[in-house]
Image 1 (spheres, rainbow, N blue to C red):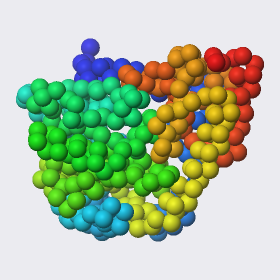
Image 2 (cartoon, rainbow, N blue to C red):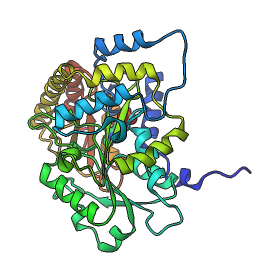
Image 3 (tube, rainbow, N blue to C red):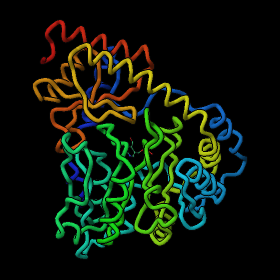
Length: 391
Ligand SMILES: Cc1ncc(COP(=O)(O)O)c(C=O)c1O
């Protein structure tokens, strides 16, 4: 029998993958479903971005460079300056990635010493599962800190035991937060940075949802660092900001002394972003108007869903930013509730799919258009009326 990397099995079967299989089975059987489960909304990619991609497809295809083209890194630096008021050097502080998932997965390979005393990677649960997956695959030890509603779903490094911090090489924070939609402020980010710096921990901020705020612009870790990015890395993505999930484009920005080993690693991963995708990425990073529109679109969908939930007597937590709504499950059984909703034609994700601490919650993703969201909530109301869901 060929051997396999035990870290693959340790991750367990992804509950999201199981849900997708069930949804696909029902769809294949002709069942009409309103899908509020996957973070991949239906809105089109901006025309200028699509045009930039098409125009950049030339007759000859060459290998892209590991760190990304300088002009793409410059576009990211312009975005960081414009949006966060921080100056970064595109040559030494920015790398272009193929989306942020692969960047998050690969990042521990640069900082975990599998045989050393500092193998721990801290992350908040419920959270994005790739923080733990990447840690395990790189020979690290993921350390999940269970997040609570009482703490506003914040991972607070100031409360970690000294012995945990002494073992930790990487800490992941990620706000606005998937799956809860919780947000943080600048003082929180400054506190986390101070702890990380005091303990030589690389503080990584997953900023995939940074641009999807409703009332107050979400701060970046880069705002907490100012022009001294020591100890900090922010992982950016165009997927949600610009409706570019299929393009796979993101960036890592931060401390030049941390970017250097990542750059060395990324020369080996073969995940360099294709040049034509980078042309589209430059068009996206340099434009903010389409992001304003996207925010308004998600705000409209969010209003429909929150109004409907309130009318049904349901409550939510976090849900201040991102396109997720984090709903408290009556009766507390998120898997049973999600199954009941599926029977009613609505796909939602049980909170436990995002790890310990997610039990008793459901994540709704505002994927369909406004009418689709309204229809989904109508189906939910019908199911409640028919007594098919716990109250
Ligand atoms: C919290 C979080 N981080 C990162 C990602 C990865 O996004 P992408 O690889 O599309 O940039 C996702 C995707 O849903 C996410 O939810």
